[in-house]
Image (cartoon, rainbow, N blue to C red; front, side, top):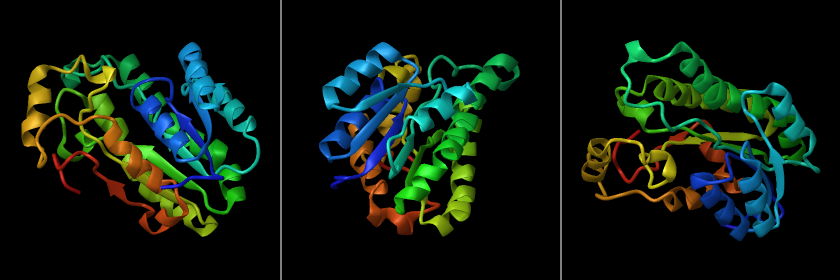
Length: 242
């Protein structure tokens, strides 16, 4: 899928899934703007790919607005990949610290909404804006002992559908993808039992590498993806179906 001539902003780009997506989108010809709170790693990757880098703190509205203000020209795609996913599982809902709950929802859900709000003018300007939100299949099957993350990703799914209707009149497509457990550093803390549940429960058994998502997301960022607006794609090798 060629993304030649399309400017794409990717959050959470410095490592893990974000870095895999950045490399694939660069190979697809996209003009990339990478954003992450991890400045050193993010700048290094951006330099390698010939991309622009912006430091981004998704908990700070001013930081989000600053990133949007640095965009040069129309924005053709926004990938809301930045999220807190590590060190928040394995805890029953009654034992989750309120501050942790607030932080996860601020980054994962509110941060994605604020990114869309800040980038909306540039997306409209392009005439073919596309937004891809990273959800999770944990929100589809109701993963236990992960309540703040599951709630945030369920919110992403609902927000995607609502915004598809609000932004459709501007020719902007909004979709979400829901992967399962990926083979990235952010899932290393997950108990082996949960990994095994995924690996044996998938229609295509085994592990799921982050590269699985790259081509799907690249397509969703293309002009051809507009008919899919509002849809959730569980890109999880058949662990759960939508």
